[in-house]
Length: 79
Image (tube, rainbow, N blue to C red; front, side, top):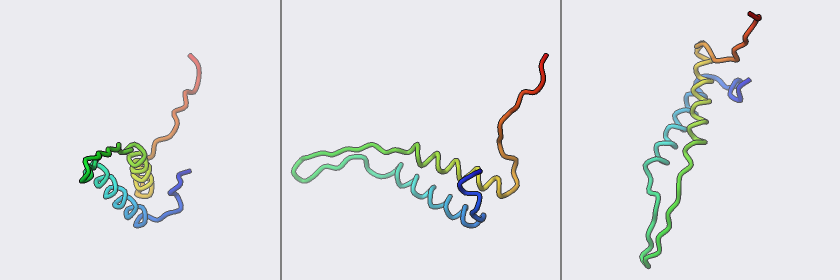
């Protein structure tokens, strides 16, 4: 069961919009800063967690809209 199963579709869509906005900001902001004294600091951005969250939200929205969801594949029978 999804962590988003109890949420309604408008809430999920609002969360998706917020997540997309956060991802856009993360991907477009500066990754280094230089002070007026010449010190430079740089950092990396962890986008993987945010992208995974977006994928989970997309799956929850698809399930609420009635789209078929992925599930396990069972191999039945022998030869």
